[in-house]
Amino acid sequence: MSSAIPLKVKSSPKGSTIGGGVKAIGFEILAHLERFLENGEAAAIDMRSLPMAPNEYNELIDMLGQGELDLTIDMAGPTRIRETAYSGVWWVQHKGPDDRILSEYIEINRIPDFLCAQTDQIEDAVRELNDRLKGAL
Image (cartoon, rainbow, N blue to C red; front, side, top):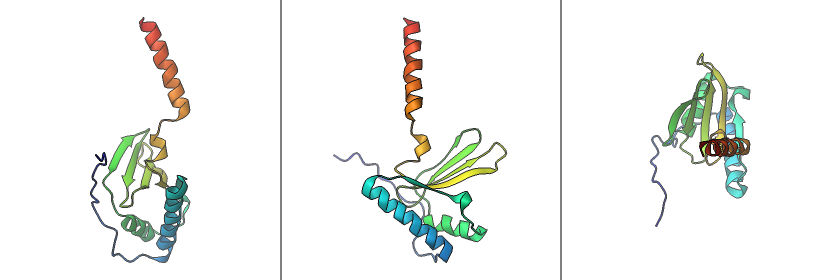
């Protein structure tokens, strides 16, 4: 019995023309995605470090399309996590309280890395829960 959850792509990136700069970024994403598939190596592309014209930025959004998940969480400002139409490729945008973009990444991973609990956070949780339970006895 399969435990897979069926997902449906909301928009398809197929069939649109891709400019040279966007195509280069697309090939970089593809190379990272292939490495991730081969050996589990996650990667992130810092969108704020790329010299892109506004039309290229929108072209890239169109090329990657929209997947099933699109959520916003509050982390000292809104953080939007958008699954693209390509499994394992995520668009992550962090904004400040003033709605200004602070960081923006295309992340290649099963889920965006910052959503995973870090070892030091889990260690803190173990200590805090242990202390609370011992204090409750």
